[in-house]
Amino acid sequence: MDINIIFKIATIGILVSIVNILLTKSGREEQAMMTTIVGLVVVLVMVVKEIAKLFSVVKTIFQF
Image (cartoon, rainbow, N blue to C red; front, side, top):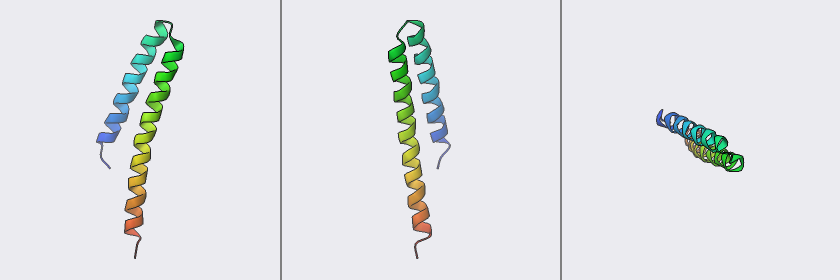
């Protein structure tokens, strides 16, 4: 695992929060909520891929 994934998640979080604030201030609460959900899904997909890599490494280590 690389520190790079943490920076990617932080960048996505910052961008989603800025877009969320801008959309909320302009009266588009539904689109702001959708933006937040999309950001959450993107981050979850990234984390699930990393967990899958972890499981494959653990499986390789404990295979006899």
